[in-house]
Length: 99
Image: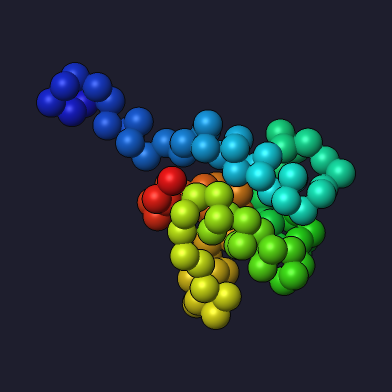
């Protein structure tokens, strides 16, 4: 419990509303034949999970940058971690968004 009497674990929980928005953005931007709710939050986006390839990731990075007002670099070493899963991408957006 914090000083306000609220559980502190709430601070560690993912932003489910933003996660749903990001899942919908992925489906829309990449014209996927699945519903946003079918993207498992912890499943890999790249390769075996959702099956995205490097071109998909680049396209997604552009859309995310525009939608959330963030700068994403194609050559960033962080990209592997940022695009690891829907949950990882959502957490990154939540920390860096300007819109």
